[in-house]
Image 1 (cartoon, protein in one colour):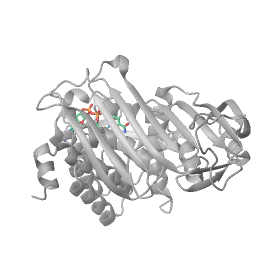
Image 2 (spheres, protein in one colour):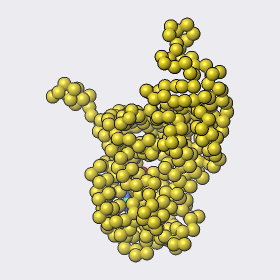
Image 3 (tube, helix red, strand yellow):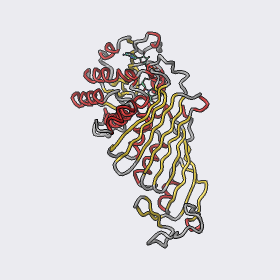
Length: 395
Ligand SMILES: NC(=O)c1ccc[n+]([C@@H]2O[C@H](COP(=O)([O-])OP(=O)(O)OC[C@H]3O[C@@H](n4cnc5c(N)ncnc54)[C@H](O)[C@@H]3O)[C@@H](O)[C@H]2O)c1
């Protein structure tokens, strides 16, 4: 078994979480950490510390580096790491501008290093199961994704880098990219149109944001994020509307959710085979009530159909015979799932180093694609009403 020596640049909240989570991995040894803040560098014996990350790059035995600094620094540090011949796992967002993100990708291509972005949701087994159902068409076509996320900001004082757009990019770039990427993971499609909204609590703090995205094929996604409510209301809901199913996932590290779906024998079996799905209720389609048209409503027959097992959605015809409801549930705690995801994310990079022909789960291109949406929505959100009116008046 090859053991990989890892360096971590940026040893704040998340850098330390990664180090702890990677500790049990037998093929991983964190050998050095760097942080400009000396107080952050309290590490156990055997791990070298550097106050300047450039010195860490000179360590010959380091194979790969995790870049866990604030977003505006990712481009400079990632390109320097790869130019020093190191493989990299870059925290989200890939960068705060598309130009910086493209420079990172060009450097990877020039240096031939392995480089990934830490989109941990792609490694959550429940989300992987839903992605697989989506790709197989078990629920029909995905038409709508709606993310609603309320976070508290008590641990984010106004001077925190998070609130400085030139350091974080703003909430859509810093935070929403995770969820934008999740939609891309479920149903990749060409981005056709993006717009955004935002609210500023004061000139410095943009604390509510929204992005609307239209994809080729008709999927419409919305992403609302607020860092403005008490911790009691901290929630994340991800609603997915397919032709044949409604799914609602709970939590920013989703551990469970609900499902209501029209199924046939094959798609029901696919659901029952999933370790995460529990069936609560099922009704044969001929006994299920469709109350979309109240009794007595003129014509109620679907033209050309006398068969209740045939349903039409957005011009597509599906054969179903039952309506089911149930729950998705993972057994582990949020802490366990989060740690498993960050382990899997690093192992994906190491696997690619050992087996170059393997596919990376969270490539830099996925980071660029979600950043595109976030950058466009941010620019649209920050456009003043006056300039929007000028554009629509053709000035
Ligand atoms: N993938 C995830 O689930 C996830 C979760 C949390 C944070 N993150 C990402 O991780 C990154 C860091 O977030 P955090 O919450 O740990 O922030 P943080 O402020 O707690 O830690 C960042 C650390 O980087 C250090 N740093 C900043 N610039 C530096 C530089 N030029 N040289 C050396 N050290 C430098 C700071 O001193 C600090 O200790 C961000 O990009 C964030 O979006 C990802």
